[in-house]
Image (cartoon, rainbow, N blue to C red; front, side, top):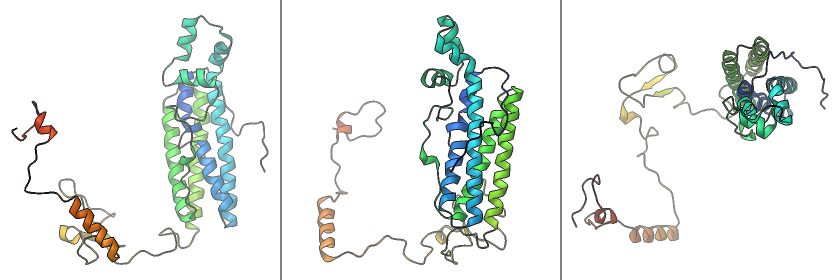
Length: 297
């Protein structure tokens, strides 16, 4: 059950309207790294989690993310408020009104289509969708995904802070960015509170392959580091050791019934290519400059 408090979690003080900046702010309202996506991700995880401690944490953070959605939405609403009134009432001359709403970066879409209110789109106008929620129902995997999501959201907030000189907007964005750090800490602690948290899931990996590093991209730029050297790793560089690593012949096979094999043989014979033929093709007949070598007709 949710109860709404009319006071924002953090006070929003916008110095002056700026529709173009408002459009950028939508990235954290209806974007993939935004507050609604975060709230829905953690809320659905929390409902399904069987651990009472994680459930409580996830629901707490999901609810806080909804309050962050309200903060960022209020920033958008304040940044568009002046133009919104002029647009609704037709208060300016046509040219002046057009200049007000076409300040770049989709601000005209925000004003005309959504009336200046915060809309569930990202800064490019892409509609919010549930595909942003990447939960998989395994706590050790979901917590790692949550950590990454908070990290990405922090970077978006950093970028938004860097594109505005409005001190009130910067202040509110800094608060929201800082809470991403706090949430990441909580998720990190929750992950490592699970005694066996790696690898994710229940089934163990095959020990023969768990410590191998295959150097598949060879040439200038080859680097060694803790990701592929040391006592944890067996570095496999020879090409012949990178193929058919199971000891087989490296071919794909399937066991078929007799009637299935007969059907495959018929298909193979009917569609067989003749390597000794060189038929005249449409490319030969219509060949012109730049066609390369073609059959002389």
